[in-house]
Length: 618
Image (cartoon, rainbow, N blue to C red; front, side):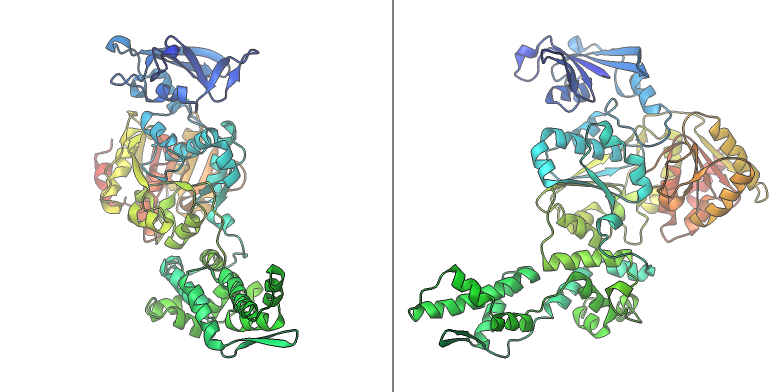
């Protein structure tokens, strides 16, 4: 356990007055069934996280315990009765601050002992409610999303386990980092994937140009695929004539055309419409047979539907198709693409996504990650995608509109927790607003929650990184940090010749401090930096989503998102900023990965928004 609540009352439950509940990660009871430790997710624990002097919520005292291993080392009380204030939570609670600031190494830990009221409000939001969280660095948005999953599985176990829960992260390094949180909270049946894993229906072996990726990720491609799919329907040219005994039953072509028009007007999936057309033709024939005095039943209907004549007519009018071949036709046949994208894509955009040398078949195609998303869209046009009970998506600001649609299909009848930070959008198609992103997700009515209080990143670091906000996300207010930690930021200009020595010295200093350490640099610098560290005798691991990181990690900046380390060395910010169109966004991510100390090493001048801070830095 990590806390205790002493109750004067709880709502109308006056019988709980004077009760004490110890609060922990799991429920523990004595041999007689009486609770010894109450699961943090239980309703009775809500006041422990939410109570304030203005609204005690029935609490007389909130006690927090400090542990070192299994040894109780301290406790603090916050007394609510009589308006007295003892050592309180938040910045005033020493135990809370020590737990938040405790150095860490390895994967992310749970935060059940330190959940704050603004975080708890999101964690315990209704299961039917889709919540979008705009969270600045260090506000705990990822942990909040994972704890929300654990809470929902506790509060609604049958529905969520039956419907399924999915956590989607930006890359495998991120999933490796968060992989222990839910098991530590007692939840083992949650699938955690990247978008590539989720949509892995074809082998991804190719890369798109930036323009091609942007076009393929545009919501316009959903219309292009729909046009190409339905363009395969043929006008009925011949009547259907079905022999039954000595009689021949005829459905004229114009009547079949009316059946096709009716099915299209209903908005059915393509595959469903194909099946229904066979049933409709059979129904017309049975109606005429019954009008002629014949006795018909379901077996007669099935027999007519399966006749060679009906099947041949359906194949000719409403051909069978599969999603992979549909996308292959759109990208590999310029005439198909031009017809399907008329008025939607410019000739330059058509050129960007059209394959100059069409592959012989799906197996020889060099599919890209964006192509896999198109195939998923095509599959849903043909047959409905099953919906899950709940989907959590982190770093959602980086999803393309088509990726949002893919996730939206998977929570169409369920709910979602959408986590991200507009300022950290680094893809060419990154969302400029949550309203647009939620619209593509199919959750326009979702509530937006803002987490702008930083609990992990020290104030000096957050203030320095926030100098970029006016250039990358002018609509966002800078986050405020509760951690005042002088000396947490070091700006160190060096000469180009002195950079390797300064790097190894900074790494040695970081390794001498408690917790984890990382060097974050532009991707193309990583191989050379690895050689420098190895030559200096500094063991390290290059972060690539594989094995657990060593005490010192070398992190390509494109994989840094969502991670955190106690000591971070950011190398050459100007090079990170210049590497891509949204380089300042990428730099903002890199500068906010440190939770204890940030060292910025640079031989090149800092990007302009940061230069004033460098000029006044001691």
